[in-house]
Length: 124
Image (tube, one colour):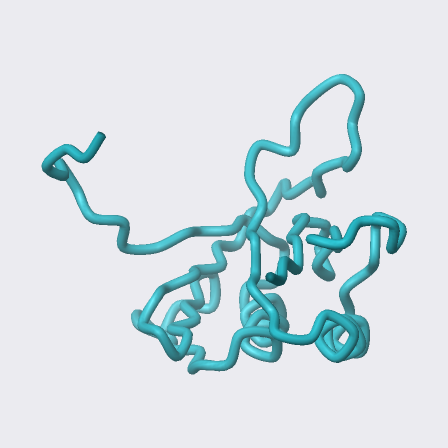
């Protein structure tokens, strides 16, 4: 079922302790440009090559999510499409990601970014 939109998604925002550092991590994974829109170190924006925006917001009391957590869901994660998971994994690990799930699935792998947000590499 398709409906007329009420709004358009502009930006996905991730809380973190150091916005510039996390923005550089995701720029390394996704490409694109990190822009400082307001000359504000507490807010960094990555505009990836497709034009999508991911922002990184300073959260002074940031606590990394626990995954897997038997008491709660992860709330949100990013699925990132890759052509070659082995090459993508090596690059992600070099950038500071951590592999969370073993290699026993043939469709996705789960990682943690440098501050604890989960993301998956998926492939066809």
